[in-house]
Length: 473
Image (cartoon, rainbow, N blue to C red; front, side, top):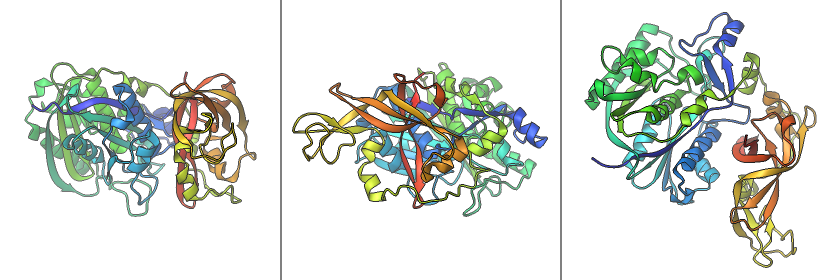
């Protein structure tokens, strides 16, 4: 048997949580069987930022240098733009090599399986990342939709070995789809038809693996709600105990293509000496099942129970459902070529070291801050953790026009000067940045903060991503 498999994994779930009880109170019903709460992405989060966060955790858990990654396979059904390959953004934000090979998968909830299989079939060290944040009709399908991301570092001589793949295809249109140019996910809502299509096709993919049900310790099965994985597993396919180990939809909601992938991480962390199963169903009529052997020594699944409760109205605002997004005024225009040229500094990955005097400058372009010579700066990697040197809170009416939509979604935001040390310990720089995922009023000078990648603003129809900071505790 090949030793190729999963060496490490990472999970990211947005901090906000809205409960089923709050949704039910607002609408008089809750269309999300078996879901107790769902994750709510903040106004500066999307599939790209969640993918970067999950992939960063996978790299940290492996203690592997970003330079060791040969390729990235990225999957989502909810890209922030209709047409653009997004994996290069993930590569840049993580500080991977410009020679990194990329693949992009989408179109159905089995996209995560496509990314994982791509990584398993490739050579070298590959990151398979899947992130999603579906949106539906607020009066119905949206009740179940959450958000999250999972990343798998696939390599040879891995702790978890890939033991096989099975598949099945049976055209089933209308189970889950999104019309062209539409943002909302829908289905024909023919319950019996949908259940049968998902159950039978997924069971056929599992049967194609030829596993003994008694040897499956943990399983993550397609889980658009809390009951579907158990319907798939019925009649001796997989035990209910094994299914429970990989079921996460009850805590984070239906995160589209990412739900089964996040469940796989949970299953791999709890699995025993036998097999771990993952089964993905693709809206439209295809299913893919994977068998793995081994266990991940981590605690990524614990993040599923973290979070902060938000009201239902606040959850709608954060996701932009009740925000018009119209902004008066032009704001500060930064041309796309200028933004691109300074990506390393905008992601807080590097400063510039002066070859004349050795001092650090941020950003690393133009004249040296110390000797004032115009030089060609050397790249100086920065630590991802810094300290707050100064901070303030920008309330409504005080933000530049490009940040008004963020305020409409998330309210007042924190801004800080963050001191970051060079990774080699020789010098430090100050970086102005926004704070996120925190009570801005509680952040004090001297607090430790960690870099995270978020949406900064959108200009000329292009989302600009960059570094923000969140408290380490």
